[in-house]
Image (cartoon, rainbow, N blue to C red; front, side, top):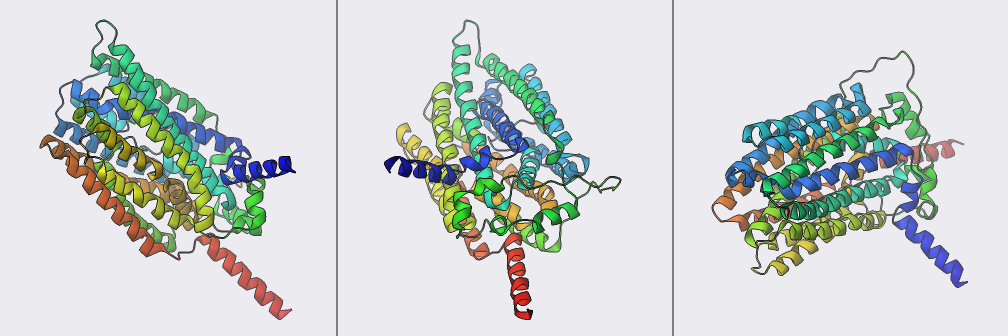
Length: 487
């Protein structure tokens, strides 16, 4: 009896954490998640050393902030172009191109110390200036994941996708920190030389990501509108159950992994498809509202980016790279594991409430980070922030995927990323200026206030919102009632 209860409890836990969902997912889903891990591993490397590297070649704080802003603007332009044309040109090809640009930028940073050469390399290539996602990868991968996953398990897939990204950042930061410490201990090795070795490693990671992109199948490519319609209309009642609903069917909660791989119908031969996407009027209205709100959150993220936070702890408390790397490894692992908790919470209270109620505490702790004069208290606030700072990511992407049509997802997510990039671009310049006048603490307080305002506005505007899938389910139920009435 006890063994049966233990087995039942283990099954329940595996379902709650989405383990069955990710294990039962298609091969392409696993490859996309692995790509994110490798990419964010590289971003973790650049997050720790980018500001320190620029400082080591005598770049001022103000010019470091300008560098971050120009890099974000370059990313915005490249992301806009690639994501708008990704579905027409091919998602796999676009991911391969982005991986090649990631490798190119790593090579340039490993070989050059000229400020403007590095600016051009960061704009044309792919270097994360803030530890966050850059380039066209995220929008394309999320669109493909939404297509490969049924509605019933989509939040689980996004939770694991986000978790692996955060884990990649964590391992990238700690490995980079300890490697830099070891390299600097060698005779004749300067900090600058050690940092350049890490950028060479970054280029190598770009090649690994290129290989993973090549391994993807044609199932990641966009379906035609007819195929998308067939996939939606052929879903079972359990699959159509909205991710926005706080109530889940008992059988769905017990066996969601059974519906993890929807049928993908190959495109009809000979039919030409435009390389430019189209977005329906209803989706444009939703997109506009979300973009306005996301812009405030992104601007706040730009003000208090991970790179600036590492710089803050290094300069204010004189912590070595290895200690900062260990600190951010711990906080990133905490943030990664919290995504699985977010997936479980969203099944009970809905995606929107999960986004708001988990993100709001992290905004408060962010504002408190510069208050203590003791580094351990500041680290505590950073750790408390990490407990919930990323719990809104998987629900947010599932919310966005459910709000628009399948054929619109790549373009919509690309536009959202562009808006977030443009909004975040002003943050680093402001933080660089505040750091230069010894008012670094204002950046944290301002960022926390903006993020809290974003959370409250999201709750006010979208509470009670119904996704496309919920509307379709309601229409189907109405048709059934009418049919039964006529009969």
